[in-house]
Amino acid sequence: MALPPGESPGFLLWHATLRWQRDIAAALGPLDLTHVQFVLLACAWWLNTRGEHPHQQALARQAGTDVKMTSQVLRALEAKGLVEREVDPLDTRAKRLRVTKSGAELAPRAIAAVEDVDARFFRPVAHADVVALLGRLADPDA
Amino acid sequence: MALPPGESPGFLLWHATLRWQRDIAAALGPLDLTHVQFVLLACAWWLNTRGEHPHQQALARQAGTDVKMTSQVLRALEAKGLVEREVDPLDTRAKRLRVTKSGAELAPRAIAAVEDVDARFFRPVAHADVVALLGRLADPDA
DNA sequence: CGGAGATAGTCTGCGCGTAGACCAAATCGA
DNA sequence: TCGATTTGGTCTACGCGCAGACTATCTCCG
Image 1 (cartoon, helix red, strand yellow):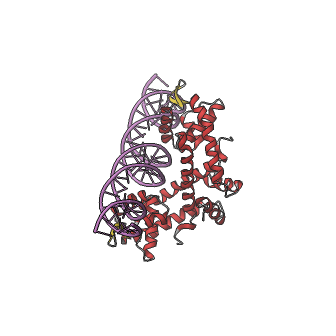
Image 2 (cartoon, protein in one colour; image 1 turned 60 degrees about the horizontal axis):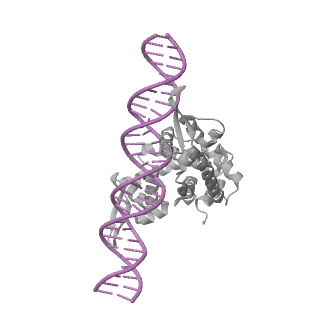
Image 3 (cartoon, protein in one colour; image 1 turned 120 degrees about the horizontal axis):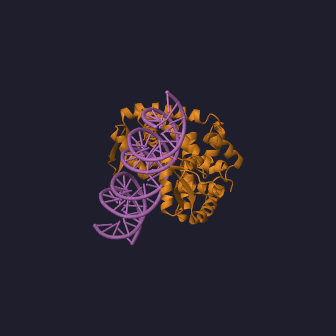
């Protein structure tokens, strides 16, 4: 019990992410995107460029987001005219995702903004170290 | 642009923290505490054992939490009978925090549970590496 | 064919996490 | 001393993040 918890790894992880999220939010604010909106837009856009029009489930899997939240955020993106959700004729339960022209124009700019934040945020540490360490923590089975 | 973002440090940081938060929540659930409730209870308890009865602001500074959320969560802890918020006679705006007998009994158990999660969660990596890396990311000015 | 179970998506509810506005009390300075 | 500013705390609002329940559809198997 060595509080104050300045040395607790979990505490540091938590605060590092909070700080990172604030930086990301500040960078995406001018683009009128939240962090999660960005992630889903970017993932959908990337899949679209590969010729895939994923279901919401597939996108959630790709982005590592909760399916229920994905549903909700995608509707927000749809309301902003950045994506379209069309019913899959082969499975009328599911919806295929298509990034609109406006979304396709926004996505690369948002990605650049986020990569810029990442570069600045992680500048104090070596890239390979971060990826190795966080990769193991984010998904120990990988 | 190397999506899927499996290699993006920010993406990994985000997901590592999400996973950690789920583990923490699972460990604290049986104690009827959320993560933030735990942090504030533990910090207040620790300060109390040092003979300090901090204001909410001071506790928020110690825990690195938002002041407004701290206010709200402390009222939840008060409703559970874990802390008391008594008006400071020297500054009637402020409230001094005192962990109750019940809170003082719960805090060490919760701390043990969280330390257990941390030990398991960070087992795949070296403790010194994590602290060095996350410490710099959590507070680059330190 | 028809019922059982699985799957895609949505709805409700709760607790952070952050921002902006607000109030009351304390402090500082002319 | 009185007014301006600062400080401690609360309120409202919005968007995650997660859990549980719900509908509609699809699939599989007898």
